[in-house]
Image (tube, rainbow, N blue to C red; front, side):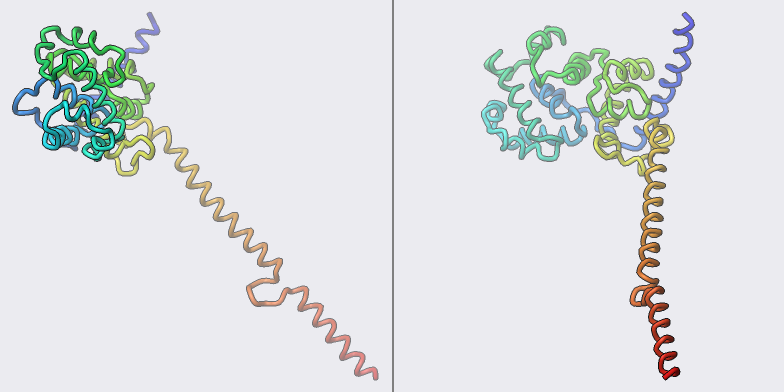
Length: 287
């Protein structure tokens, strides 16, 4: 019981941080408005695959390009992956996106032999999930997004980008099972779509996977990752300065060993030459 009560303040602090960060991120990035017309189910499925770990505006633009480039979804299904990857070039990992898109279309076509599948909405998200459970393209994010956008469910989709961003900011484990419940507790359902879009945007622009741009991030003050790595960064800079000082001192030592500045004779050689000259003068005088 004491453990649970001890965890409550920590959870409240995390929820407070989530609210604060969401407000800052939403003010920083534009949230794309929802489509003017409701999309057919097949296009909602395609958009969910394209949007995972990508910026929302770019995913929607890619959907439009697919519509314009190909006469129908069956042509997309039979097109080679390199051709599809070219159309999806401004999305992360376009080849992988193209492969997942083709797999989606193949699975739908093999199930129904058509892409007019709006009748599947009658079965709800459970019915849709039962058809594609275990398929590589039907990820947890895709499922949750379809539940939110198609079936108006209380779903909070979280992809790999969102997990990375929130785990860095909050200092929690980088797992959907950890991040998603925190978002559900901290934010109202009406904000689930916005937080999904703006956090993916932030993860694509600043909080990138390999080299996050912490120096330019407006969330640095609230970020656990920055706080934990600040000392390491300072140590790295100090180590660089120490190496520079060490190199300078080594250079001076070598310079002294060579006899001072470049082009000058070593002191020991100069003294030896002086002694030799004195000896020769003494011999001449004695003669």
